[in-house]
Length: 399
Image (tube, rainbow, N blue to C red; front, side, top):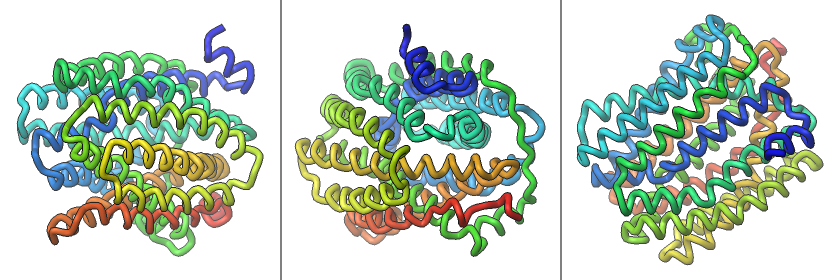
């Protein structure tokens, strides 16, 4: 009996969720092969942290501006069709990365292509994915079913950073991108076994921004913006920070990352069980406070041992915070009924606003010649706003 049959027997996974699992696992493996080495690659070929920030920040800013327009397409096709298109753009993204690695320098036409296909991937993929996941997941066991998905990917993720670092060291980034392209292409096929679902986006372009900043929804949107802020500190600044500390030793970066993932797998399952049984807001509050301290600790990292110890602590507290936070997100989405797509789009816009703010503040620190480690302190301060998320406050269907 394979692992999916065991999980399905224990958790009674819907057919839609099983297909979504298969697709997402394959896609996460392909994406995780590059993972933290993506920003490092852009940093290496550009030699500039500012360039990394502007590159990723521009994608987020364009997403905020275009997603309300794109949302009008939602009623035209089933969600799985949009996901398939998004998956094609993700493969295109890594193909452009491959050619950039072959050039081993900044090629502006490839940079513009990367920004464009990354934007299209986010537009076509993530809204439908979150809508379908909200539809298919078991409402009584959301946390545990989410944890199973993440654990499966994480178990494979134990070896992926080491494998990726080995490939980079021996063959270069271009070979790593080729392997990711193959795996991401395979992840395309399970999408067509996902049941057909449709949504119809009802907000106009400027109405979307009005809802985004309305007093009625501002607390929950601020929570998602803070999540976007601190997650981008971890996705962009932290990998480059440890790359510099370890003096560009890819294998050391991969080894430490793998061991941290190994410890995190056990913790994630325990937290998933606890989230279904205990008060989610209390778990999230404890997790966000401890996670905020982790950002402070990261500002004082000076060696590989520090990276390892702080990484384990921050992953543990991140799981404690994120599991109930993400479960609440899917609970709110499921409760919205017809307005599930409107909620999902407002959430995604809030996340990207937080990411853009992180990029802007980091660029200000660099422009003023202030040590970039202060962005970790800002991440700690911002993380407390995650607790503002509320099922009662954010209820679009009530209108």
